[in-house]
Image 1 (cartoon, helix red, strand yellow):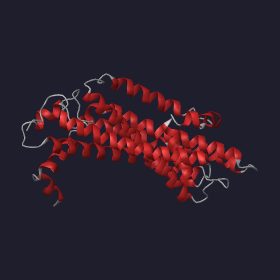
Image 2 (cartoon, rainbow, N blue to C red):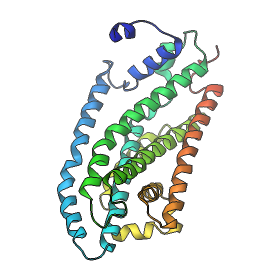
Image 3 (cartoon, helix red, strand yellow):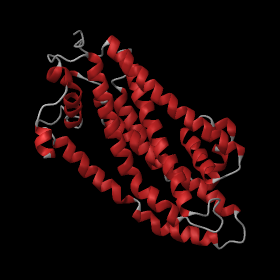
Image 4 (tube, rainbow, N blue to C red):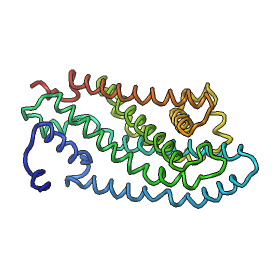
Length: 295
């Protein structure tokens, strides 16, 4: 029954959403529809099992820290590793966003497919924004699933601020997912601004390279590096540190600096979402690329 229902034609909004979802992973470099999607799924499936490879070293590390007579070394190490994980997840979603940079807004391929149909520009941009958000949500869930479930268990300790594993899991999940959404929406908003200004197409390669450097660089985060970046004059400019603050606040850390960073993280996320909505609204009213929304 569901397959038969999907084969039928439904309203304009549903059909536009179907079109954008089915063709989101298509590329001008391949001729067979769906080939890019299969390649991307294969790449993601290779990336997903990475976390089990680091669980062993993390277990040994935190077993040693938990056996110490004081809480300081554990608290310093856990902050550094939380910052590493948040940075890694944010840069991973940033890399995927950079790879699909040209699919974030309606483009020439969409113009050719639906430009002659009796649909309004706001329907097109609304369906595209919904499709992009759905794909982003799926990517965020897939990327964060194993680390979010495994990290609180392998870093358990009697020195943890939040002793309950459920509380630690909720804190790291909220921080990683919120950070990923912030990074994603911030990049989409940036592209929307650049497209409305008719500039920035050359930034895709630069952005992808930057995200790769950030992914590799995240593995060098150590406690001695975390302390300086948590200083207010630096922390206010480093998004992953904001979401570290959010994680620490949810866990119950009384440090007022962590609370200030958590507030900044939530404001940044809401601002990024607002900028995306504004960018799509401007694109709908002004048009991007071919002026195919005159109907």
